[in-house]
Image (cartoon, rainbow, N blue to C red; front, side):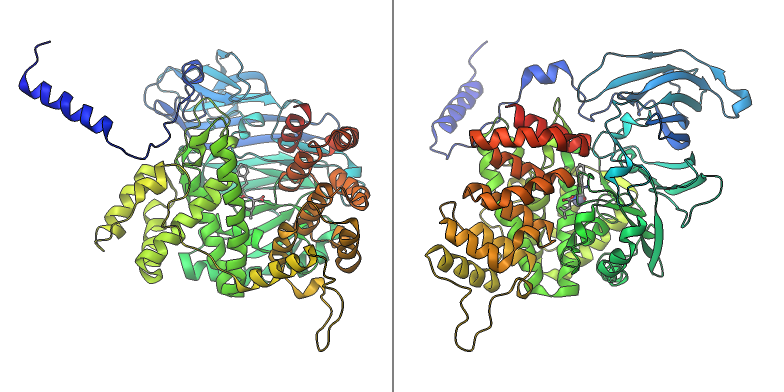
Length: 636
Ligand code: BES
Ligand code: ZN
């Protein structure tokens, strides 16, 4: 190479630049070996660019005796001339594959099941001819169908009939339906489902409101949705209407409590529509599943799946419903194109949830909710930064070769929401709301990436307003930018002051002149969480007992508070929490509660033995998702 003056100059410049004293940004060392091994950035084997499903019809027979679904997945496809279609499957038994529309006109075709990957499952490659538009896959689920939770009668509320539900997000739908399991391909679906006569079947679709004689139900989802939102629940379920276009399903024993707990649902829907535009799914119902459901809620369209721990008896946990309802806009209507853009689903949803809560219950309540989440974010940012994947603190993720569930952290949820809150503050709420409505209209029933969002934001908000904003830092860099808005709460300061007094030995429950005794009902869930989190792990047993006697967190029925109290109990070696905690761990499978308790238990050798013993009973009561998390905690 000849050293022309230009090359010399550029070398000099780059040398100088490298000497410059810049604060060093952490460079992400991406796991190169993993990427080479399995590079499926969409977390799917499917070849949707060549051939993709537009409509899926399911014929399903739900057999509780064998804990198996026998199914036919009939794919109507747009084929751009492909000679093969690749579907995702995981733990499914494939019986045969046919081509052709009418059942009479079906012709068997060749297929190959490829090598299995522990995260992605297996590719199912079906031979087509280039004009094929109908592919029918005959299959059955197995005990390895991770999405499905088959519950024996004793695990249900009624204790007489079994229960089945599915959990598809992020990439588990392929474990109960052979399909192209990728969020960027939206499809409509229909289904004919046969279940035992005494049971009702529900899906994320137009639903029946009562059982029928035959136990055969037909479903239609006419709006195009991503595959992770296809869902089913079968059980002894009844329905109560709560408003014009909303209601709740649950087992008979819980239905009255549900009606009370969710009475304000019509108001919530109104509030969300006022803020973000028309509700696009006609009907909004909730189904309360058994306690094993691994989440508080899952936003299956038209039918949110919810955990019975939301039924606190005092409507104190309805923000989870605000959250799932919010997904009707962010997530279900406008969807992340890849799991690396997960924050577009959850960050927006936490932001919208908070706006709904503010609209209905005021700023004080909304701020407390946001502050509790923010505390969790601060802790998790530190944990991630010190761990093997420090770049997981970016909003735009890099999950190639990893389980997309690894991206399910408070970064997507809370950093995402804080980003939007900061933007809102910068441009003014009125302008931001106009922008959001436009965003939902523009991308409704579509999917997008973080980069596409970034462009849209510049073009329709920042540039017209001539506003400079550190977008790149928020989206693609570590940690929390310094312009992040600060959330303050006087009520938090007060309850934290109370906790501090208690920690210093004061009996805060003694009635003082003109003051009422402190009661649990006088404070919100978030205040009690802040209270418990302020208490140290060095409290005298007497102080723990004092709290226990006066506030009775361990049996208060509010699962958020109970779970937090159990953790504090373990930290302080307060033995009285162990019996109720044992009961809780055996009954409830919601991962958000179970995980931190087990994490705390394994820190001490005796507690670990206790946890392992209890887990022998509890494990069977958890969904695969919670089970695999706890397995990992206990086996390390
Ligand atoms: N969509 C999520 C649950 C989910 C995320 C399942 C990723 C599988 C993979 C749901 O909307 C959710 O966030 N639920 C939270 C609610 C909370 C943030 C209010 C839960 O269950 O705790
Ligand atoms: Zn969510």
